[in-house]
Length: 489
Image 1 (cartoon, rainbow, N blue to C red):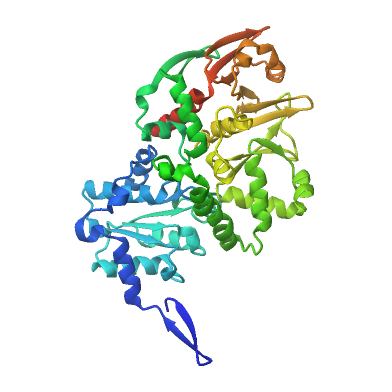
Image 2 (tube, rainbow, N blue to C red):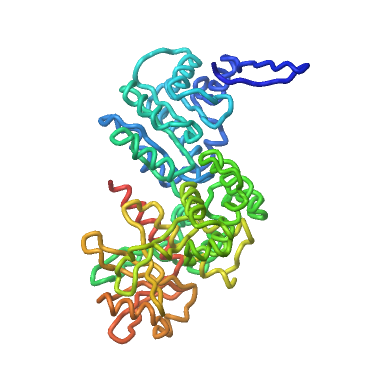
């Protein structure tokens, strides 16, 4: 039994099954390389994301029997990356007819398990050969208990490689950790980093490395030979740069709301989350996300949000978890002036995982917009998103705040501090950085980083020194150094 279609005819209900041949035909349609050894031109012409070179070795790894779980929000290029993987496999000598691609969210596959789909695919290609298959299941979260199905496949077909993808990142990761321990390898594909944006736009020629003595040691940072041009692209990145399709389409940039709001946000809020979590009324969820998006980088509390929205705190907490699961937002925890964590997370910051979400919901920002500062901070935070080994904190106390703080895993004490500014004023008036100075004094820290529009250098204030860097250059540096570290492991 595959899928039932119900028709009402003369008050009699006729139930018809989708024919098996239709399923096989659809699988053949999704795998054109079985015929000509090539992926579709639309996928082939799109440039590869820089993260592809990190993702690829996980698929080729055959000394350990593991499935690969590719996670990430909608429209960041997961499906494109999987098709680039197919091309790479073929180029490396894998028989094209032993590479299977199935899109789970297609309704024709409803009620079919992963093993059934795998066997149908082998029937569709006309081969029952054992071993050496590469099987890709796209948007796997639409299959209930997918992790149980996948674990069974990994255990049963030991000479095959299984790759799955999904858009509900946190939900997939939880399921992966719960049921796939020792069987799954997770890989998170974030929205485009500013480093990738520069690379995809062929702008690497405007980047130059600089050596900065930071905290007594030489550190590699990057800036630009043309800071004005880099800043222009940084503003474009904030408005449009999170999604590969948008940065190459001037037509889409004219009305980003139509693409991002309808094709990404609405599908997540109105379809993905309701189907995954059984949400019957999405109006509250939509209103909550709109409020968070407009105030990205701000401090929130469940009490204040509950009073403002008239939604009970327990419901709000679940909604925030759902939005995190969909990789639309990220909560950041708070520490006090002395670097100590709070026992209760009564207050927390929330960032959009991608600043262009705000531009799509409301309107694109200019470099002089009054809201540009919070979006610059959101963009800088977004560059940290792929560092699964580290998440920044923020410090806040009665009369002060520091935007981002790093805590030592060993001592749990602050090791660095960052203040994100879209202004040159503080380079000339470091005394105005009172909260940052107080925090560094309290925690015996020196050389915090302060971003600017285009000022670079070390500025002393009393017994402390502040390292200034352009916000665009700092964002590029964080994204690039994250990628460089990933490629070393």
